[in-house]
Every structure is written in structure tokens, then in C-alpha cells.
Length: 114
Length: 110
Image (tube, rainbow over all chains, first blue to last red; front, side, top):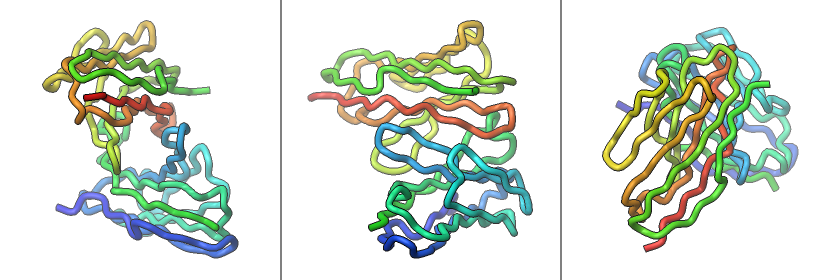
């Protein structure tokens, strides 16, 4: 049982480059979210999805796009990377209403933008 | 605005000490409060609290919720160096988005 799989684990980008962080879960979870974690800031919600075809913005959505074409996958796109996007990114999923079931987290992607 | 506030932000104690971590929240349409432990990688789930006054326990860790005061504590007794981690508190908002506090960084000295 793979759970939540994030790729890549590490990435270095140059300012202005684009890339996609991949997230896949095999638990048939409806809810999926992307968080970024910066020192002293806790986890901040970027985007989330309550099911295939439905996405919504979180606390810090600027500079990121998401789509949810299938239940399993929830990729996060950086269209034009900026140094302010240097962070650790976590994907998380939940069976249903996230507040009742908690989250399962992926292992994270450490992104550095130079 | 919904928010989750944790205190202290960092804590250093000696092995064997007991620690209490605090979490206060202002979340409309409250459903639950969640505690996570984060070591080197992803947060791992500890507790989900939905009812006031009912303590949840797992070994040396316990947690309780006070819905009237909008407050939760996480206790760790007889701390060990393996308890060193960031402890995160989280609560779902009215729109089902889960928001996290900034975390308490706990360091246990041998």
C-alpha cells in the first residue's frame, strides 16, 4: 500500500523555470491538498480539492496552479519559479471531510529556486 | 478569521521531564482538532479530538480538548530523546480546509 506518493523528493530550479510536483494516492481519498512548509511558519495551504474536477485556493495560492482530472492524482504546477517559492512541499489526502478523518501526508518535496 | 495558535514555539527540556504543549483555536463550525508529530519528514498523525473533556492517550502521550475555552493540550510524560520533533496542531475551517498552527519545536536533551 503506497499511500501518498510525491515526486521528486528534491529539485533545484532557476528563477523563471516551470515545473510540476507530482502527487498520487492509492487510497481512493476524495480530499487532496498541497501545503508548503517554511521555517517558523508551520504548514500553509496552497490549493485543495474535494474531488475530481473540483479545486479551490488555500491561504497562499499565488504562483501555483493545480488540476484534479482523476481521484488519484493532484499535481502542483509552478508556472514561473521565484526564490520565494523555495520551500518544502507536502501533498496530503483524506478519505472524506478532512476534519473528521485527518490527513495522510506524502514524504515531501524540497524545492530550491536560485 | 479562523486561526490556530500554538505555544510555546520552541521548548528544550531534559530527558525524563514532562511537557505540555498548547493549542488555541478560533474555527467556525468546529469539527475536530488534530495533533501531528513531525520528525525529519512528513507529519504523522497522533490524535483527533472531537469531544470536550475526553482524554485521548497513546503511551506517554495524551491530549484533551476544551471546546468551551477553544483550547487543547498535548502532554508528554517521561520524555525521551525520540520525542524530539515539531508538534503541529490543526483544525478544519468552515470550508473544510485544514489550517495548521506554526508548531512547537521540542528538543529533548539526554
